[in-house]
Length: 189
Image (cartoon, rainbow, N blue to C red; front, side, top):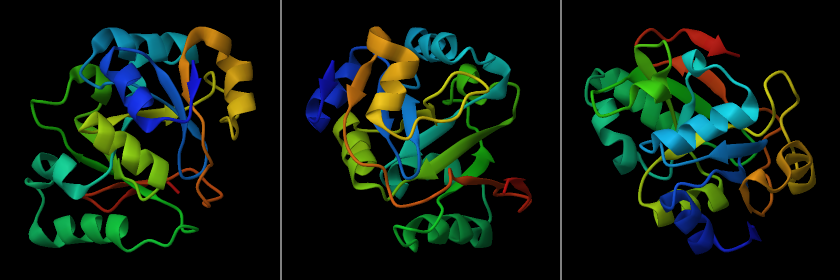
């Protein structure tokens, strides 16, 4: 199914489907992070090992608040500022945060932390809000391939094996940088 309806796309996620959708810079694949079968389908489609872990995408700070609690006030503010004070053309930042017990092991992979980004991309914000929580966000491409930058490219990779939310990419030229919130280490520049 290809839709431009955020409500339909959120319903697909709630039903355990995998969804391709545009993000700030590339197309992503997403699912309900608490649905292991849907998550395993993403790994199958991407030919990606479970050990790597994936990013969780949220629309608002409140959706990830429990993950921010273990941080110092200074670290917490740095993370929030990076999500809140960003121009549409600026590269997004994904943060590695302490993963509480409520984050499924398959999301983290072999890592003690979880990768999280609060997005400003209007379609992703609407999708996370309609879903009522964060969703999985991993680039729409088989492992080792270039991330899809259009609906056409995503559908060439995955054809009718998943659902698609059609829309425009954000204005960022590169996928998000990844940083460790506790150490400040840059994981992906």
